[in-house]
Length: 218
Ligand code: URA
Image (cartoon, rainbow, N blue to C red; front, side, top):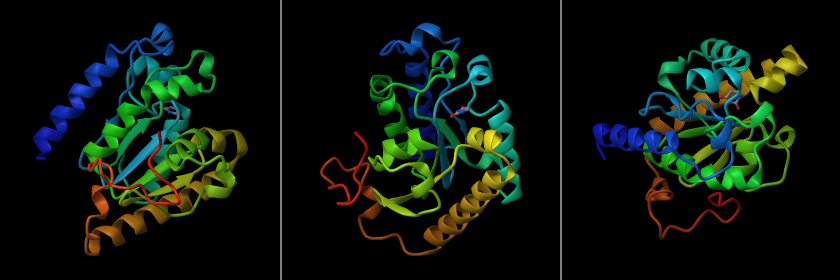
């Protein structure tokens, strides 16, 4: 697929999300929040769902958690424009409550297609919702973070959600920074090395078997 094709498909998905009524979250949204950043990104970040400011502006991570994320990205030499940022659910849960399983299920196809289109070397899941969804695990973020999980021909590296670091304090922000450094190193290594035979086709090949230990979410 050319970059033009990828951008066209992402734009098509974004307009689908904008009018989606597949779950109750559509009732309270100002607008759907599809993504921000580059479709060419080597690292993709996945948060939980839009909050107040995201719902108002139509972009992910533009509130306080977003400011912390931007700062930490800068500290590891990344720019928000060069990564791709999306959420598990595209519409704001009322009062910033947790997204419910049926809402995540209804929205999941957008995320699957975003990952498939952007085709990042590294997916960084931020917090429990994104991590549990992708890794199909019930293990909490404290135990999964900072680990490189092979996932459908790429890798998933979980980290804490920046909002948790805002509540918890600077030590958690330091931990996220360390996990971001790991993501940068891992992406560099993967992009420098030979592409593993057939490995990256996991998401695009419907016949491909998910890795035994993880598997595609869904
Ligand atoms: N928290 C998230 O998980 N996503 C956003 O876009 C903003 C805050």
